[in-house]
Image (cartoon, rainbow, N blue to C red; front, side, top):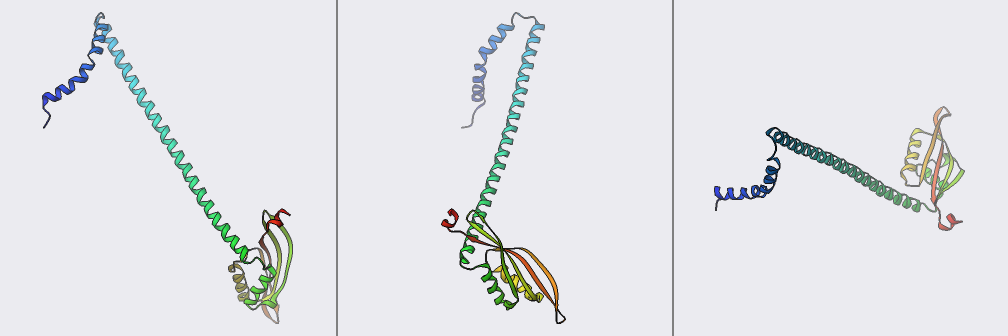
Length: 209
């Protein structure tokens, strides 16, 4: 059934009837005023009403801006937490990989490993020196620094040896590498000096001891 005009009028009459007591009080209050005073009073009421409306609007807008800034701050913090979580996960993954590498070569010294690598590329006679220079312990990780010398190498042999060392998975870092040209029977060859750090996980008794 479609609403009729009469029903709409009755519906709108209810809020107007609720304002009747306020209108009556306002009429009684202004009844003894002169037209000028009544006009000033009504103008004041209107100005105050507009003032409250403007103030309320400005306050709400300011509140909304504050809430928006707070939401942006929380979103930034959440993004930082996500980045930290990702970095932590990646760090844990790298640590597990490093521990596997350390465990895989647990019984192999750097000297033995370099001799094996040189043998694979057929330059074992060119490996002249693997000398330990220092050792340091970081938590449960031991780092040893070695001086390594190879001589009379062709450029191809140097590249093959370094590739074998770097891709083997042995826990080491080449700190420095210095090349020097040497001539043997008129042939131009290379001498390679390196500083290499090797790493080893210590056992609990080694750490506590």
